Figure: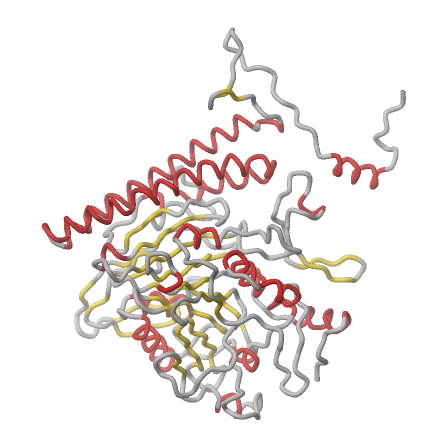
Length: 560
């Protein structure tokens, strides 16, 4: 039985036992209509993996003959898992949003190790998302489709949290397979109350839930009885906590996962300082139930209604201004780099330590903010604000859910992690971010100037595009409106990628060889004869020199 407050020794043990797949973690936030400025619903998703290439998936709408089958491949590995029957019609899907403005995101929490595999299962978590988007029109329908698919074909992955939003409702669904010997999964889905936001980041978050409120909570019939059969729960139905039974939070789940949710909440909602210790992995447990007692709420009310830009900026975070700020310790180096290379944990003298795991991380393949708007026709109302690479450095481009083709810079097959493509947005953005690691505190300022200008332009012009698309939709029909939106989204994606290529060239010239070229009136300076003036030789900060002296003594001392 754990004590109410963890001691240092117990913390170390729990840390060693953690089994979270945090190296490939993702982050989601969920925003209801009443919590947004214009009545949109929004979901964010950062697909973070060192083996994921950033591209925008596209599945066109299609009619299928009777008896048609779909091959299922595991999203993470490409492994063939089996086949399932196709419905007579499947819907168009752009990335993680379909033609009815339904959007789905996810984060993997793992959970009980004995439930992580299921012999003969076909549906992995990625296939579950993309198959469902082809078959469901609303969030409620999506929940039922996902439940039916895993019940019929088995669940191949470990525990998963899903964000599911349509133009009216936003739901969080948490699901975990039944392990070997029994097909399917147990799950709970809860509707986020209007006016509130939620989030998840590789740690199951649903605890207790109402059992007789189908308007706001849905769940598998055996979600509690299955745990009893396994000997994991003996209490009453009312006290049953999904997360505490199927995926108990430990140091890793709090410090590496829940801390990201805390950081996002902390940007937009007051009162989050009371959860700082929890975010740091200092968990308190109830002596009788063994449940964590200092967890954050599943949802919070933001201090003000959030715009798309606000939500995009929730996804840009290195714990700045908090106790976990990654720019403030010596590991950031002389140029305040908020990234740590290598693994999350490391060992010195047989003692384990950790790096922080922020929302913004270098291994992001792609990320998005989905925006669903119930006052507009579906092809116009749904926007997938899509970006590649690190969320802190990306530009979110408006990709309407009604588009019928993907621009070359985002297209599948335009390069991969082992094949460079000069026309790929992923490679173009990575050139900028990876070069910026060399002198981050200076280069990030230049990056953000271009980023903000591009996103501010979208903020101004998207309402005009909406209006024009509505006129075309009314006067010329949905297909012409889709053509117009395809042209607009494709053009803007190409435009942003071109700007980023020019930004990389600018940074290369300006910061070549560790120096800084002089500028005047937005141009690099030249002398009267056209030559570049001598560059600036920036010094390291004094504290960095002191670190060098502390480690080397008089080794570099100048003898005069």
